[in-house]
Image (cartoon, rainbow over all chains, first blue to last red; front, side):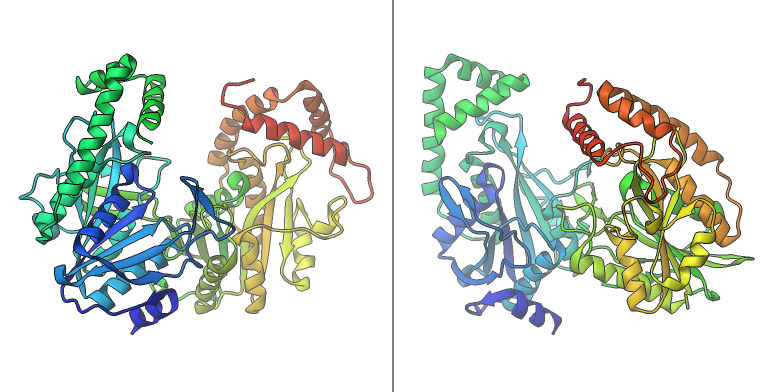
Length: 278
Length: 303
């Protein structure tokens, strides 16, 4: 009853897909390497995801104007897509600015009430000092020991030890994981490492790492050919850049040899990569 | 959203002393010192998740073990002079953009605190905060008192070292108390409970710095001693004050000489009464605050 009320007051429901024991994939914008949006859009494209609901922005976002991103006016949105044949629900959302608890509760209310969701995967990219030529690592955090067992047979790092350092705050992904824990919904945070110089651009290799896990875990049957082409194109452009700019090649070679870069070298690498790939 | 009680003690018309962090943490240091000195026991807490963003996550072996939020706790103490309730909020609930609470969340939290006061038959509430004043850090702080009812004025004026807003130069009895330490007075009034806010003075040139001002807290505690009829050992607070004094001196000596010259006048002033000319003018105050602002925006170690 309570969930029906929050869904009615905070969300617009366009249709009610027929799903049982569905899984929910949660993605955010912005995200390191555009991991969230990259995975959500690829899945929607390949699996025919359709929008069925959205959360109204009024309570959760700053509406004192619009931001401009990549030359385009951007209005915050939280959209829910469904792929009924795969029993899959996907959320793609801007990060809320206010009333985080109510926002996250609304997500779970929609997931449980409309799609009968029984498992949640929350995606996020995290910066790493590794080079793009190094295979991406996927780290997982589960909201119970039983849920953790679901991922132990995969190529993931599932033994993370972490405490929020002084002066920092937990991610919204951890907040969602905790609320799901309180409601008894199995949930897993998936963190894909993204080379720091691709954080602000995009890292399709990281998308593939996450997608590969989801594909096997949820038996989605994703066609990766288009994504493989995209990865190959990006790698090719970086390789061309290395051949044209010795200092770029030098920095990347050092990262490939596990040698660190100074702050100024890192900043220069980020700028060069942005010039090369944007 | 609610309150979780760990105990259900029988209390007789207790006083509630409530506080949230604010400028110089004057109120919270005073109230928390009193709570600790009296050995008050935990009574319960306000469930935090609808008010606050979490402040810490603990992950062990790949499993989320805990998510910690700023606490909003109640305590109680029976003393031979009367029963006491304490409320201490580690943070003011806000939107993330502002330090002080406002709007719906602040009003909800204030009402939850008053709900507990009402449940235990509380007869009066005290909150505490800071009064930004043209004083020098080498002089003592007074305590500005703002009650929520005219009937409290005579009693409040009777406590040593207290002043009302109308005693302060140029204020004419007007002012604002930002955040929940102020809002609680209003909500208490709406719900028919007497309340007063005790504000320890902090020098005008320190209020923008994120450092505590225990001298102001000590002044508040002295007033609470009188109100509650208890004796408070100030040794720890005095040691704390000495430590922060060094930090304050270092800030003070980083101010331009011209500004320090103005501020030095404050060290020898006696308290200002209405209609008396103050040692620094409004123009001086404006200049001082501009300089402080500049200093505050500089990188640490920059001169």
